[in-house]
Image 1 (cartoon, helix red, strand yellow):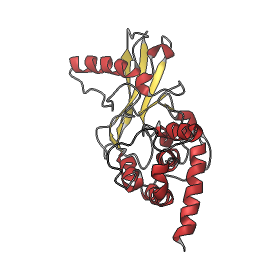
Image 2 (cartoon, rainbow, N blue to C red):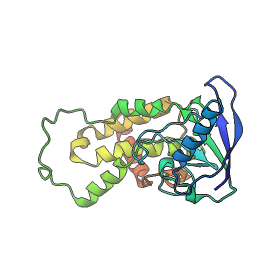
Image 3 (cartoon, rainbow, N blue to C red):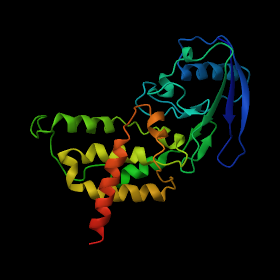
Length: 249
């Protein structure tokens, strides 16, 4: 496959960025998208040019580092797929591919395709944990949990914190991410004592980080590589409303 890449290049946060065109000849359809970028970078280095900076780590769809917008879609055209899991057979010979970083006020560009997503870390630090000492690990069956509830919690816990929901949302909202972190704890007995307190603290932190408000467009679910269900946002809204009422007493 011979491809033409249009890649966002930006030397630093305060520098002006622009799209730069690169030829990508002899790309194997079996390469992952990141492997293709590796090959492009090797060729750039051989020519004495600056390689394209992009985030990556596990390359198994687990860590959420591979935050790229490909042809206008976070993580590319395949649903339920992170960039590192996207293979070049998805594209056709002669295609032009536009590659940009996630765009959001809360995700400032660091360099080229790398953005600072530490706002997510600060939301987690505000309340995305259980604050009681549980001692050693209890027996798995010590606390009976209905399967339907456990499944909903696990669906929410699948969130890898990649930020695709923010990049896809017209408002750059982090509601799906925040809702997933709140729901996977709040649905289980161990997380219920702090359920409303957690919702209030994490939503307030989300607002402080300059994420937009949720207006139920649904693009977040569509772009999410783990397809976190939209119902987690409904659970968050319920917990946040309850917490707001309690805090006024």
